[in-house]
Amino acid sequence: MTLAPERPTTAATRTGVNSRLSVTSAEPRPQRPELKKSGRPNPAAHLTPEQIEEIGRELDAIRAEVMDSRGAKDAAYIRKVIKTQRYLEMGSRAALLFSGVKVKGVRPFWWIGTAGLSVSKILENMEIGHNVMHGQWDWMRDPKIHSTAWEWDNASPSSQWKHSHNEIHHTFTNVLGRDNDLGYGILRVDEDQKWTLFYLFQPIWHVANALMFEYSIAAYDLELGGYLAKRKRLSDKEKAEFRKNAQEVVEKIKRQATKDYVVHPAMAAATFTGSARHTLTANLVANLVRNVWTNTVIICGHFPPGIETFEKTSIEGETRGEWYLRQMLGSGNIAGSKAMHVMTGNLSHQIEHHLFPDMPSNRYAEIAPKIRDLMERHDLKYVTGSLAKQVGGVYWKVVELSLPNKVEGKRRRDVILKAAKKAIKGKGGQGRRY
Image 1 (spheres, rainbow, N blue to C red):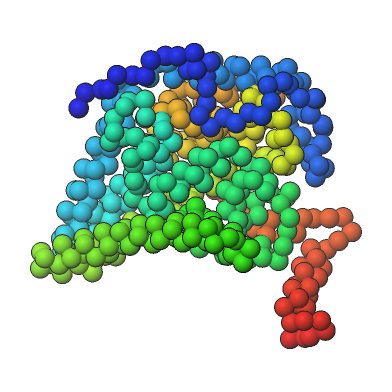
Image 2: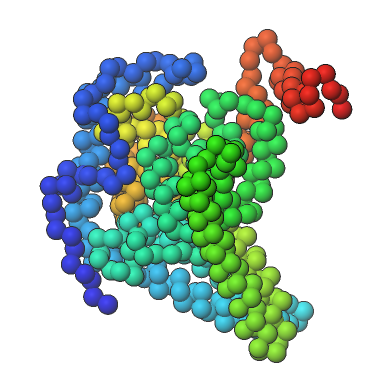
């Protein structure tokens, strides 16, 4: 397949137009306060409005330089990744046809097939699916690698994921009450989020969410929680729209389950090697591995210590420079090898991804030193660390923030007991005891 003509450079690409950038004001706003409403320090308080807009112009220039240089080398990269993933999947599934065969008490084909299929599923979701659906490769004009046509190996339909992720999350990054990705509605990951008794059990929710991540994301993209909370107030038209979307999710899950848990085990059964059951378990394990890995990468990019959140009012009248600033302060990176970056879908460069979500992922490593230098020159914290450090930091936050904030003169235990008594009283009626 030959490379389609690259989109001509226009005034828009030269000025660095970002397909996710949402600006509501062209004029710099007044100097930022030293403290947020919560009383926590504002990490950008030392910057003048003029400095913030200058940061935006420098980022525009970085983006324009890369986007104007896209070409055959980039196209060859994504095609190579897709080809590698597909051969790896086919090879792994072929090995699983003999997963029931034992050699000296070990089933080597099960281990080989399961490992290969796990890597294949991770590549398909992270470096391919996620980035293709961001429109990173639309410039190639290849209908097979285009955001409007790609359907990924995941429980969530691509159209619903693109709405919740591309349109909402990347527009309202880390804005409390606007960005539902901030804890996915089940986790408290910032002190400025209001504590309730529900969060006391979030270490359990967090582990369960990681194991079932593709289904959690499907429910999240469907906005299932919001629907259940307000369904009595919805119009018939809104309920019909939800049912339509829910049916789409159910159909997608059925197709995925049929492929992994019916078709491929049945093909293994045809080999008469007793491999059907082992093929089924291999698919289950590969999906679990993919779910946990994907969840791990995402939480490390959004929830580690040092990541900032923002009030709703802070984005009213937000300028171009301020939008960029919010992306830099609301994301974190993972340090590691090139292989690790590929396996994360280059979301290990989460800061760069949030600045330029439609930039080809293979170019993030190239601009990362420039972004870090820019942030350090302006005394802004470039959050990064090893995978172990970032994972450890997130899990510490999940446990720590499952409890109420520390307040002088109040014991956390008393706050929890008060909330529990209020909940019991509310459920049982006035004066009723259990």
